[in-house]
Image 1 (tube, each protein chain N blue to C red):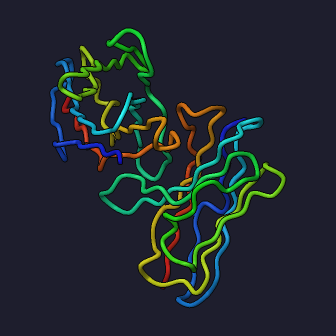
Image 2 (cartoon, rainbow over the protein chains, first blue to last red):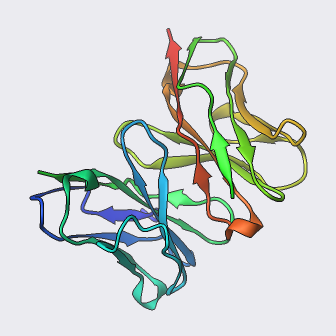
Length: 112
Length: 114
């Protein structure tokens, strides 16, 4: 399968714990996006990378959120000191140019 | 700034009938417009896009959309709906001044009745 891959698919964590999600984009896609989606809402933009450079991070929800894309390949999204309000679907997408993005199946986070 | 409005939370249509899912947008500049479909507990699947050229664009699974610049709309259409088309549909817009970052609408639930 050469699509966008996200791991894990589901994550249940206790409040206050740190979590990290991984995204493997489609090979040779230089753009990588992270979005958050809550029930009944459309995807909400968090951050994006052009190769290894994080070009927009002001929309990350708080300083507890951070993302990396070492070497311009896979990316990780970390949430520190999770809160119940962080429960959501976290979506990763990649794009070969500034046109349509291709999404992974998402990581569903539940904070208990 | 850019934004997308999907005025209908839900659209109901009978199988075999034509369907329309509405989308309007607001951007400062020439828009890039997209439609995506989402099935339960899945990511978003790209359907079609408008970048430039013909206002009527055709996409996957028999869907098409018409770009109307004067009305700032990009409605999704299909001539004959299938029960399997039932899903969540999202419209998105990007533009050069916004670093081409797609902004999504809230989504419209399409329900096709047998």
